[in-house]
Length: 235
Image 1 (cartoon, rainbow, N blue to C red):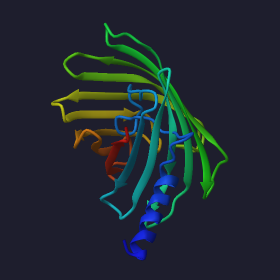
Image 2 (image 1 turned 90 degrees about the vertical axis):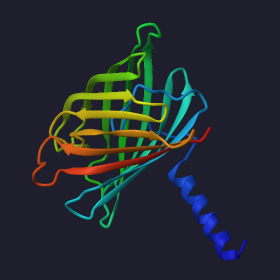
Image 3 (image 1 turned 120 degrees about the vertical axis):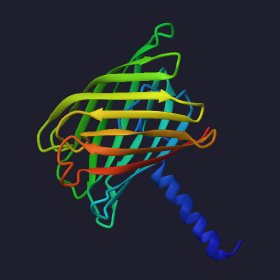
């Protein structure tokens, strides 16, 4: 291998280590943006890169995340929110925990809750924020799953004031590889979108998520965008 290629390889490995730290990590499995009822098994690691592109302007955003199952129906990890191009936005490091409190195998019902911290590290407009939620989920044997619950964001995270409301998800498995899905955060806030789309399992480890985000307000003035995500199961 040439010295130039070796240097590039080392830079790429360093990027992966910083962008997807495994020890003491965060993140959580989501349908698209809203936390799903899934919990990683102990020792399992899942990485994901999310992105959005708006048709009305050239702005694109990127969110690396990693999720780690610690056992006892709990997963933890970290998100890096605010990476964007061509302009630079506020960057938040967001540690998170999600816990499945109860699950009934016979009925398909489960209860899960979680919490995200938001710690701005660049272009700070607040010192720290929080997102807490709890949801009930129902899984049917034919591949349909729904979840519904409530959320609370502290002020300055998704709006200038505190925001509380509902969060809803729907998933319908069509085949072993394809799942149709939709989700909705209620309210007039930065995450207030209806997201219809699909989830395609490209391989045993790689999954593609694609959705179109339609804002709860301001759609005619451009509040809509394409969302894509690439997820990878490391083990």
